[in-house]
Length: 68
Image (cartoon, rainbow, N blue to C red; front, side):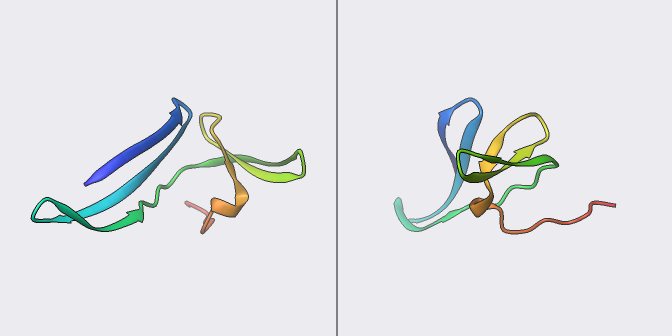
């Protein structure tokens, strides 16, 4: 089951939870894929700007690929 954890409409992450007999037996961050429109330095932190304007810390990005 995927459960959203949102600070606001633009900052959500999804947690993948597995249940057995109604109890959580594992919980992991779900991976998501999005286009990148920009990478920038802001207040000493590198941020990746995704298509649509959502910004995420570069430290949370696990892979980058050319979709073509």
